Image 1: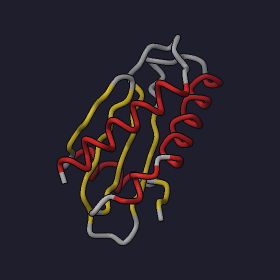
Image 2 (image 1 turned 45 degrees about the vertical axis):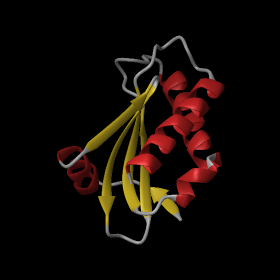
Image 3 (image 1 turned 90 degrees about the horizontal axis):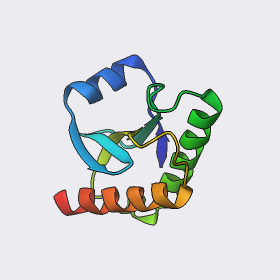
Image 4 (image 1 turned 30 degrees about the horizontal axis):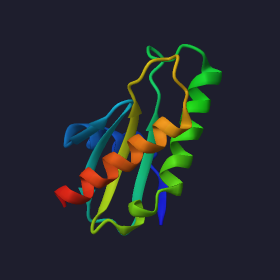
Length: 112
């Protein structure tokens, strides 16, 4: 089961002991944990996307692409993950986000 990554403590630990994978327009920052549950956070920087409406739309699209990806539940280990959007503010294409999630998850599975 995948939960939302919340709390300053968990997020600070994640950014302190991090590993990164990227495939445009997304970047995955992850840390392997011993917990029973994986936790996922989603971030769209205000510098990249100025309007809150567009930031929220991108976050919803990212969460949906992650949720619909069947391989994320087949990972050997549990991870805390932060998905960060690093694309242009003009591209809000769900298909592109979904492809990026697929490629990053495949890279993660290869590195396990």
